[in-house]
Image (spheres, rainbow, N blue to C red):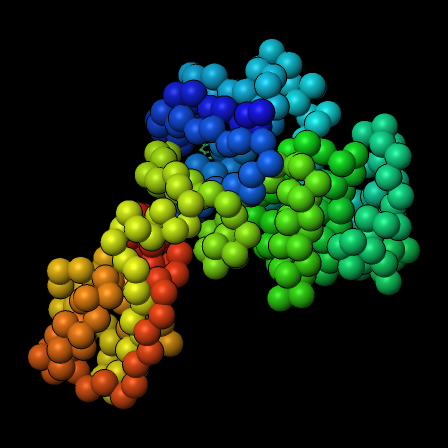
Length: 302
Ligand code: ATP
């Protein structure tokens, strides 16, 4: 079954074209990563999926229902983790879940959900005492109420520590294993890479790629990552390298150059660095990460 079908969806806010003709199908049971730099239109798309806002044109189906005609049927089967979730200050974590369970007419055990997200020790504390990461875990637990068929998670790892990120990923996989579809937005690319079956990349309101991670890597012709530690300022060398054939992106990170390129181009890159006057202190090679792929699709913006 198709979980999400967007057909030629546009959205304008006055003169701003937030979405420009989006066509996207997400199959039931997929973990789907929705990627894009700030302002690309990710939250607008999610708001449209949930009928929080109308598309300017196009059609939107979620779990087989037209969201405009039947928004209630959609929301009944969708678990939502909204961007920037703010808990009720006076309610405890457990009370949030009790509230969500009652509102959804569900029969979940609040303590089981709190334990799943690692909040069992603070379940009885008012949420005003929660850190940002704790509030985010609570939002995830609330999204899981009612064993939804589709989870829509807007930047789910925002504010989470590494344990929280790992837990969130495990939960996403567990939900997928029980048959749910998971659609989540992110600009934290490494996390998408680990968990998503397929990825869409949105840039300035347009989809520029929809593929598996391996497919994206292949499409940008970057099968290797070369990380070069330089004695010199990497910024001065980066432009010389980025022009080379076989190089799809060049990033500067922690004083090193991170070059996504074909396997064949690796030695040419090292030669070019030296020809440009650079002194290599050390280098490592590996598989191209999604970050390089993302940069090459979005023109360097994150
Ligand atoms: P981020 O990663 O920063 O959350 P995003 O990909 O979710 O970004 P959106 O929030 O969907 O991006 O915004 C897409 C575009 O639409 C931006 O140019 C934004 O300024 C504009 N926009 C979004 N909501 C509104 C609104 N209510 N009124 C006017 N413009 C808006």
